[in-house]
Structures are given as C-alpha cells and as structure tokens.
Length: 242
Image (cartoon, rainbow, N blue to C red; front, side, top):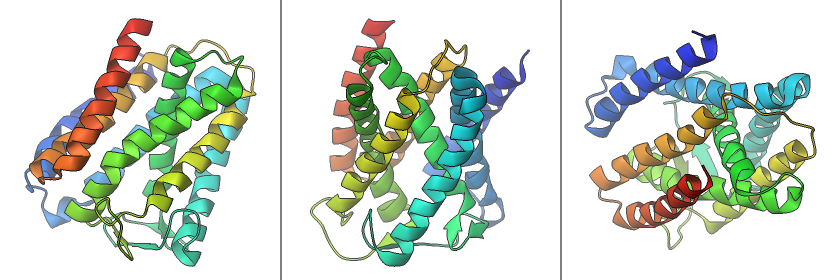
C-alpha cells in the first residue's frame, strides 16, 4: 500500500472520529490539538495531489501556497485587508506571527480539492475559466465553513456585522480572489494524470459534508440549505463527468 493511501485512510479515521466528537461537543479540552491534526492531514492530501500532478513544480507550488496563504492571512488579520477585520482565537495551536500554522494546511486542502474538481469540469486549455470554477468552488466551501467556525466554534472572531451570520461579504470576495490567483498560477503549469486525483475530489465533498453536518446541528439553517444546494449540484456535475 502506498503511503498516500495510508494517509488517506488515516484521514478517514480521523474524520469519522472528529465528526462525532466535534459535532456533539464531546471533544475534551486536552484533545483540542486533534483539530489541528485534522487540518494537517487534509492539507497533506491536497498537497499530495498537487505534487503528483505537477512533479517538482508541484513541490515548489505547494510550499509557495503554504507560505503565500499564511502571508495573506497575516495581512488580513493584522491590517483588516483582503478578508475583512478578524482575529484568531487560541484554538488552532502553534502560530507564526499570530496566524495558526493549521490555516496554511487548510488552504492546501481547499486549493488541492477544488483544483482537482476544476480540472474535471473544465479543460486546462482554458486556464481563466478553470480558475474561475476553482475559485467559485472554494467560496462554496467557505459559505459553510465560516458560519460554523465563527458562530458555532469561534475558531476566529469577526468584527462588525453583515447579513450573513455577521461574516463580511468582503471575506468571500477575498477568498475568490486569493483562490483564483493560486489556481491560475497552477493551471499554466504542465501537468500529468495523478492517481490521487479522485481522493482530492472526494476530499471536497467530505469537507463540505462535515461542515454541513455541523451547521445543521448548530441550527445554522441558511448556511446548511445554501451549502446543500450548491453541493448537490456540484456532486451531480461530478458524477456526470466520471
């Protein structure tokens, strides 16, 4: 069994345990580090796909995505730019300049899984269109992630108000722009078929399903219904393309 498959199986086990423990508030304080490990495992799955698809360039791209998104998050949290005004709480473990390391892995997971789906939906010969699709998929994830992470779990805190759970609409625009730029830079690279592509695509639906489940449990019904609508369409589109 290849180590990539072992990683994926470990992620699935961690995912199943986390779904129950986090969903039903059974996670004890001494086990909070498990959230960080979950994001690291998800990020490694996304990174593995990018590396397998783009080879040595994929390694460089993975490192650049991690460092670049950490830098973007630092600018966002420190100067209230890009995403809006927010602060991280202390639930994500080790930080670099106030930004949890886990966030860099989270971005790798988001980019990896949405990149795989965008490749399935749109030809790489149309990099701008494919990048728009990839960025849109990232926003679909965040439409559910942010209400759960902020309102229910308070992993980070937003300042100000908005019509969508007090999450600034600027945040979703920021997600789109950041994801679009990353996808565009990836799509101009020569790529090859990756055996981990399917796992990366499934990662998207697993992440979406987890946060939809949490949104339902926390009675975030607008986020739940919005997420289910988008996820159903994306899943239908994915199944038709296989």
